[in-house]
Image (tube, rainbow, N blue to C red; front, side):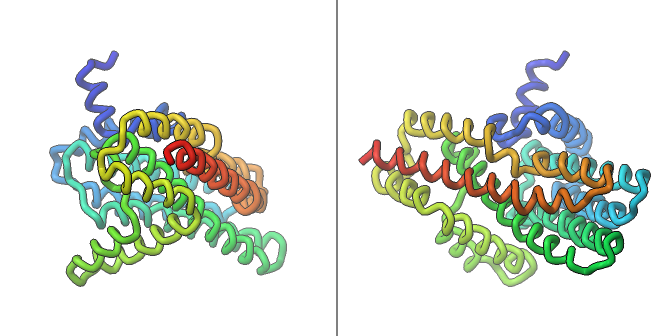
Length: 301
């Protein structure tokens, strides 16, 4: 049985229990917490863990190329372990206080690299099976779709943290703040990578006009001191939407279908799921979230 100290330490290692989906709470985060605790005083940094996760997850794509159950299981294990390490880097950062802008960017790039290779090698596998190169077309569409879905999902979860507390939501920034930060950075790899973040933020704001209007209204009316009742009410609606719709676009929401597809030997099913089903989920998520924001604007004007 865990002690109260351990429980508090575990919760402190998370961004927020409210933004974690069920599989993360039950499986990935508890394992990540134990590994993070073991690494806490070793000198291993969160960025080192992230880089290791990139290499581990990158092995999944080549392993999925082979129509062999042993290679496929090895690929699944690599991706699961890579995601555990992805949990470890964030939990280790929060336990040790070692955080950096480049760490946040690397964390996002890790998943992009894993799935880019997965899509490439699934396309190669399907091209061989069907004797055509046409599967690179759905692979590219799936990759772009995935990038947008992951970007918007992360945005909504970070927004939820912003309404939870100033400390938890410190990473939530608008495009002007991101551009100002980028301008103040010294030339180097960190600034080059941070430039990608500008594009991500621009996309997030472009597809959420009602949310941007709501945030401008809050800043105009309350500055940084948003009333507690507004925070609580928004979080309640946001949490319900995350659990019922948005979580389908997370790592867990897509990998369950991915694993089944490659195990049964029909990788094309996953492309269909990514391009059709998850894009419908994306549209519904944005539509419902914008309706929530419109309602808050109406009720507070």
